[in-house]
Structure formats: C-alpha cells, structure tokens
Image (tube, rainbow, N blue to C red):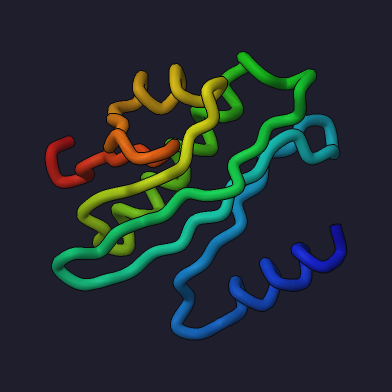
Length: 115
C-alpha cells in the first residue's frame, strides 16, 4: 500500500544507505520483491525481509534470483552473515541456497564467509 511504499522509499534514500528494495519484473509488471537491510563492520549482517513473489510466478526461479541478488548486495557491503524469516513455503528455497533454521520461530541464518 501507499503507506509502506512511502516508508520503503524513505529508508532507501537515507544516507549512508543501508536499505534496498529489490524488484523483479516480467513483461513490464512487478512479479516479486524483497527488502534488504545491512549493517557494516566486522560483524555486518544483512536482513532479507518482506520477500514476495506473485502467486502465478512462483516456482519459476524469481525467489531464487531475488535471494541471490540480496546476498550479492550483502557481500558487496561487507556483511558476514544474512538472516531472514521463512514461511513454510519459502523454507525449501532458503535451505537450498544454504540458509539453516536457527530454531526460533521462522528465523534462518546464512554464514556468508563460508561460501
């Protein structure tokens, strides 16, 4: 909605930049998105949040591509790890790219330094 779009825009324009809103498009229409928040320094962490793929586009590699883009962005900003919250539907994707559940609610972890 308009409210969250305004918040995302404001976060993405803050300097130094620490938040990105990634989008996936097919034939001129949005089909997926994710928000990436990064911290910096020796213990830098990327939080991947609000991942969503249009229902008609699921299982076509869009979620994997968004996750890969988020992890590439995290690595470029020196993050040592990434976290996300996974729905049951997303668990297969995230475990396939190397995340593991931390056993608390829906939180998953990926050590970027080990790849």
